[in-house]
Image 1 (tube, helix red, strand yellow):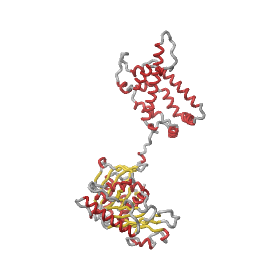
Image 2 (cartoon, one colour):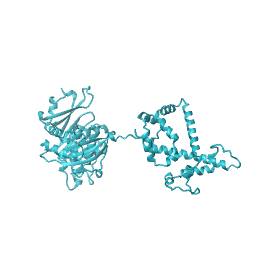
Image 3 (cartoon, helix red, strand yellow):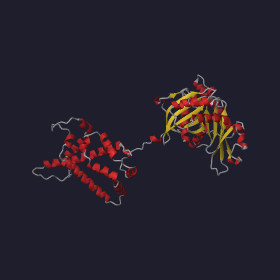
Image 4 (cartoon, helix red, strand yellow):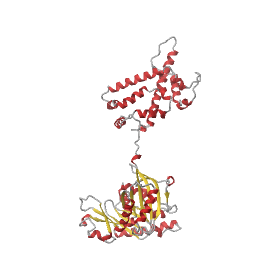
Length: 500
């Protein structure tokens, strides 16, 4: 087990401080003894010393003493010009002082051991019974202040650590006994538990690769990023046209970001998925063969994949079942690509539903609305926590409204989205919530220094769903096509936090 050098340094400094105080007291006693006329008997040790003016001056001098400066000073043979520290070191009374201190410490230890009602004392006895701790305490008792001054602190630590290895059990006992100061406790090095992960995000014919590490506290650090345009002959509007070429593109980025041994999380645009929620009691069976499940699929039955998620206790018949539909050929294109890449995969997930569930756990409203803005389409999710969730495709995205007049671009888009949401909510006899949450690649194109989200809309970044650091200037690899991807960075960090 490693011993914190800072703890050792603090402990040794505290010992040095005590030695200075003891020596000052001893020096004052000697001073009083020599001053008394015609008497060779020393005055009682420590008697009325604290009241003497000489004692106060010495203590003040000790407090102002700069050890490092004294150590660097060249030795001076002249007694008149000797440093205060040298006066202490060459004192003939020093060894007697150490002996007095050790006797005093042993006496105090015996007194504490005799107190049976003190739980901490019994614990200390248990600790000192350990062979390792006995050796350490023995060394501290025999430790020579002058010897410490003869070499550097780092050398002292290097000599001490290899000789005495405190076991974990002893260390835990010491912590319980408050033997360590809170500021000097050894902090476990958890970097070895950090996990490197790669995230692949596809949307709007752009492929984003992120290299990051996540620690035990779900703190994420983004280490590298690339954004690659994907031509239509590799991924079309609804299908992966060329899995081989997609795998080659992916492997180039994986090698560039050093993700060869990292698991991958694949996040796909929300527009490739449709979501509908059923009451469990309305379904004869929870499978694609159920006619009601088939009726809500936008694809032919043979080309449909469905993922089912119960939104409440399976024992409750009135619970909800969320169904997520996707095109089988599209998903197969990605699974074929991942087989060629041959890396561990955390999962393949749509972007918006995980964020939606995180919002409903944070915001207490009867209905929650989330829009995922892309270039040519907007996905609208409406639902509640552990309840119904349905998706709607709006046939417009950010590209239709982007213009040189950035302020008008954002205003026109959000006016149209707001009208579409009101129509859907009125048809279902539902009231609008206080805020409509926004995410997606299109958000970065619409919101800028000249236009902020209008009232009633809120970016998911304001919810702080994840703890991450993103500093492009410190990254060796940071290659972008877009002017901004801040919204996507936050979304992907949040999705990873929810998946691991």
